[in-house]
Length: 232
Image (cartoon, rainbow, N blue to C red; front, side, top):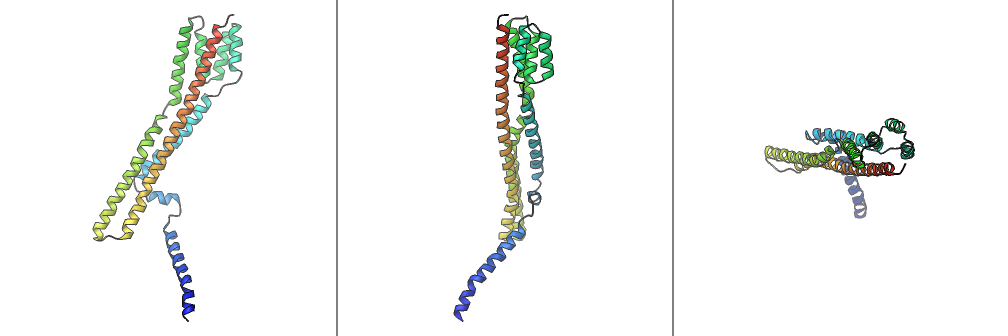
């Protein structure tokens, strides 16, 4: 009799653990949306910043990628046309290509006949304007990277305030009040931190690609100046 009771104890423990696991699973939100809603009103600005940062990261990435595109034979064609005094054909090729690099070369072509320093300066000015256009609004990602964790922490603070308010109403410290408040409001902190990481990584990745485009534009500018300095 005693042996049979002892043998039944592990089964009872397993049943209790299974019941606790089922109860815990039932309390877990069925999707991310319901989890986000429980983060409180602070999740609204975090959500808006996420949508904006995602759109900005994709839009700037496509812009930077297109800005770096140039035909492999572009400068060879420009060189042949310039050395054969076909300046109009070279300008037409630049207008048809319509990229930051082509617009720089077109500006240099329009200054042919002036001192090399003036041509270099005019190309440099166009290059700076093109880089400014490429960098447009990228700085917002850095701003979001700093603001998002702050909003998440603010949501957690609101949650703690509500938790202590409920404790004061109940006039007792109950574990369900404490754990529930912390569980719900830590969602906003986690969301803000994840958004901050995404915006921070996107900003530095895009700036790295912009630096590569700037270096490429500088290389094409120097190649064009070398073409102008070659003997006819």
